[in-house]
Structures are given as structure tokens and as C-alpha cells.
Length: 168
Length: 238
Image (cartoon, rainbow over all chains, first blue to last red; front, side, top):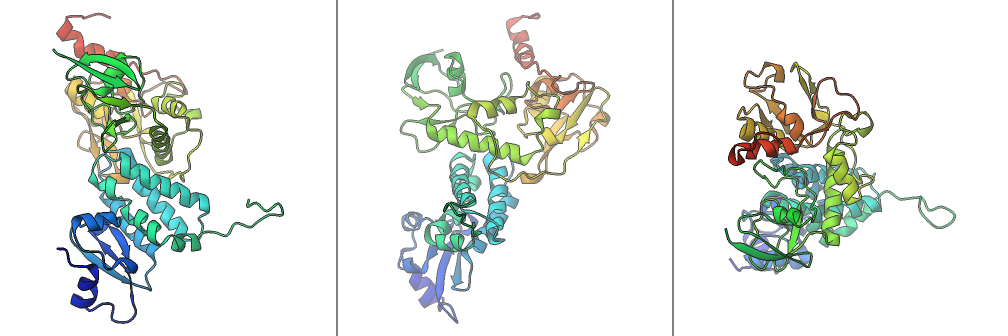
């Protein structure tokens, strides 16, 4: 407790064998992804919360530069979609729709509007869900959107610009 | 009984201890949208439509299960709450197969009413078109799972008021559905007394009386409240 992520990942864990660290996912499926630039964050409850992640289960997944952060978000959302009990509406349906939106983005079929809806939905699921599962389920999406937004926007469908300068 | 004073949307109110924020608001004529609440049965706080903002509170709270307290300052219709409610209703419409035009409850549907109330005119989410079934095995009633919003009112009304406990919830998450008996066709469940309370409790056209066609189902929701208080108040007629 209190030592930095860098000490754990690079010194104790030996870092990434070939390549560099891109992000560290902490706290399990409800946690968030912390970018390599923030490796000097100490591992304690408050610091991890400040950077958009959490202590959670205490688990850590270190990812190298080959990893797609959108795929990571989709992976965790798939888990939450399967774990939701279904009692409250935002968690039961929200996780399904978040997974669908992430899949749409990864398939290169999403537009800017989908990204906006996804972000709005993340906040609704976080704030209106009945229990902790729903309240934290969008964390992997929100934290990757916070630090790796360009990975999402790079996957968006190019909307052809018409003569009047506006998209369709 | 002691009196509690609180503020809802800047309106000063006096109410009784033990009441919920939803009840206090209803008594004062303030409408808070809800789908899973039904007078006379236990609240579960599942639809999340009655969420309110409490001054000084960290989280949004469901009005149906939050008791009033002295000095509370409640906001029921902030812009944020309205946006969130609209999105929750959008989620509900994308989740099932809700085709109002051919539904028995058209124009008598609480889901439809709530959609109008929160200003939902379309859903931003992709319709999931789930493959759900219809059970018409009961001689008098039918259940169309396509129209079910999983509010569990039927489960609670059957268990708490009729005492038959025909309904329950099976599976979880997106696979969740209302199940009759021990996963039997409704018509084969011996416990069912054919009282029809679930028909009245259902907010949509999911549970209906056979023979009703488009827009003909009218749920008598006040009947349940009458049944609950009849014995206590010795009022056998209404």
C-alpha cells in the first residue's frame, strides 16, 4: 500500500518483456484503466479513485502498446452484461446497450452521435443503478474515454461531407 | 404518529413519519413518475424512474423506498433527473417488443403514459427485438412476454395480496423473464386462483384477459388498494 504502480509493474513485475506499458487496469471489471503516463500514482484507495479507477479486488492487468483500449472496455462490459442480476432497468438494459455500442464502434459502424449516446448512457447507468455492480459497470468505458478517447474517435465511421459542408 | 416537515420543490410540506417521499409527494399533488410502485404492495425500487435529488445527498434516491425525514429538501424534476428518466424509458422501449398500435393496453398503458410524461418520442438505442414467447394456456388469461417490462408487480400482488405466489422471476440480466409455477405453462399451475389481480397490476398489456383486443384492456389498479384496506377499515364495498 502506497508504493507506486511503476514500482509494482516495472521493478517487481519486470515490466513488459517486449515493448512498453500502455496502461494498467486495476480493481477488476469495475475498475478503470490508468495510462502509462500516470504510473507514478501511488497504489492506495484515494489516489486510484482520483485517477478514475479503484482498489477493488486489488487485481492488476498490465497492457502493452499492442492493446486496443476499446476492446478492453468491450471485454469488461461483456462481463458486466453477464453478471447483472436484472432487477433494475439501467443496469439490466444499460449494460446490454453499452456492449452493443462498443461492438458497433469496434465494427467501424459507429458515428459521433453513438459516442455521445454511449457517454450519456455511462453516466445514467453509474448514477441510477440500484447496486454497486451497475454503479461501477461503466468505469472501464469512462476511464478509457478519459485517457484514450482518440482510440474511439479513430474507429468512427467517416461521414461523407456534402457540398454544403455538413455531414449527412 | 409524529409530524415531519420537509420541502419538495420549494413547497413546504407536513407529513407523517414513516411515509415515503413518493407518498408525501403524491399527497401534496406532486407527481413523480414510476412503473414498479403500486399502492398496496411492497416497493422494490427497481424501475429507477422515481429517483429524486436530495439537498446535501451524494446519490440520487428512489422516492418509493426513501422515508421522509425532518428538514429534507427534495427536488423531483431537475433537468438531470428528467434527462435520466427519459433515457431509462428509452432503454425499456429498446429492451422489449412494444408495438402500441396492436397492443391490448394501447392508451391504457403506464409505460406509454410515462413515455409521454418524460417527453420520450424516440429511442436512441438499437431495438433488441428479443425472441420472447406468449403463454395462452390459462383458460381466462394470457401473458405476452414481449410486452413485459419486468416491474414484478404481478409477482408481488400474487404473493402479497392473493397469497398464491404463482409468479416469480427466472434467469437474470437480459435473459430474465416472469415465470409461472415451477416453470410450467400458466394453465397448469394449480396454485392460480384465476383472481385476475395480476391483470390489474400489470402496467402494460403483458398480462391480459383473453378476448380483449387492441386498446381494450383497462387495468383497475384501485381495486388492489381497496382489497388491501378492506379488512382494516371494514369497508367491504366501494
